[in-house]
Amino acid sequence: MSPDTGPLSTSVPTSEFPARKPSKLVVSFEFSPPRTDTMAETLWNSIERLAPLQPAFMSVTYGAGGSTRQRTHETVVRIKRETGIEPAAHLTCVAATCGEIDDVARAYWDAGIRHIVALRGDPPRESGGKYVAHPGGYANAAALVAGLKRIGDFQISVAGYPECHPDSADDITDLDNLKRKVDAGADRCITQFFFDVEDFLRFRDRATAVGVQVPIVPGIMPVSNFAGITRMAGMCGAKVPGWLAALFEGLDDDLETRRMIAATVAGDLCRKLESEGVSAFHFYTLNRADLTYALCHLLGVRPQARPRAE
Ligand SMILES: Cc1cc2nc3c(=O)[nH]c(=O)nc-3n(C[C@H](O)[C@H](O)[C@H](O)COP(=O)(O)OP(=O)(O)OC[C@H]3O[C@@H](n4cnc5c(N)ncnc54)[C@H](O)[C@@H]3O)c2cc1C
Image (cartoon, rainbow, N blue to C red; front, side, top):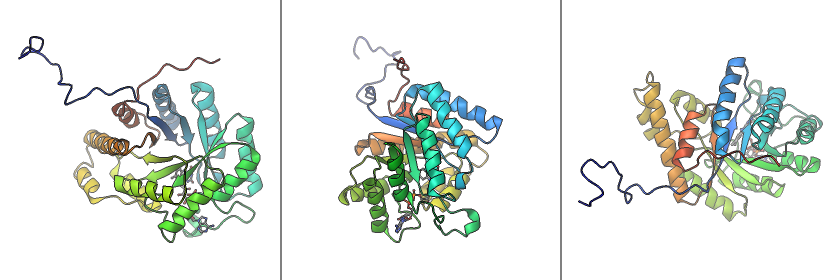
């Protein structure tokens, strides 16, 4: 027994739990514009809690067919004004002409917003599920990226699909599409959520092989509402592995345990990705802070003083 670790010592052997060094990881957080006052309160509490982690950006989604156009704009501008964190506005091609979308983009540029997450968007429900470009609109995300670049030198993020987009005939078509978006000017690919680290690594390797040289940032969805995630996964073509279903079995009425499992599963995924060289993570927060905050803490991302405005 060493003299400084007597029987009552609570010190943890550092060989088993090496202290984490301050993290060099980059994180970003995704939110949705609120529909009600109560939702707004939840959102802004979450933004306030997560802002001190100094994410690279906070992005705000855009509802189907531009239904959140005004609320997305207001949320994005308020994030910039109140937190000083760089916001990113999602923008889709659905149900609008190029001119209408260009007007939205110009309004962002004029408001000092310089980062757009450029997306095609999903077909409106009444279309029966098949995407048809608006006559006079942008055909897809690659065309939108090119259009945005004509308006201003935006930083642009685009979507990528580790398990292939459901509209793509195969992986090659999907990767070619990603390459077109990057060639049009995208700076970063943020992936759809996934649960199998191998799906992400295979996607990253294949994207690199077809010449995609921008960062590929995994989208991390901490799952505590299993039924909700299964529904979302069904819509976007992500698979929900059997082992994940088994972990949530019997917990429908036990939110507290579900949340602990959510943090463990997502934490494990993040740590595996980090060990494979991933250094940036995009969190789908669902407008809640606590799981995302815990995951960042686990990754060594800690609150920092807000840089003083010049
Ligand atoms: C990080 C992230 C954020 C998102 N945010 C939002 C949001 O805020 N609002 C929202 O409504 N949705 C959002 N989505 C969902 C997204 O809009 C859908 O997944 C949509 O179905 C595809 O959008 P995309 O930008 O990937 O489309 P695209 O890259 O245009 O591609 C869609 C599919 O069509 C195929 N395709 C495109 N062009 C061609 C072509 N010329 N020839 C052949 N095939 C082609 C592609 O291969 C691909 O399979 C988000 C998704 C992600 C991953």
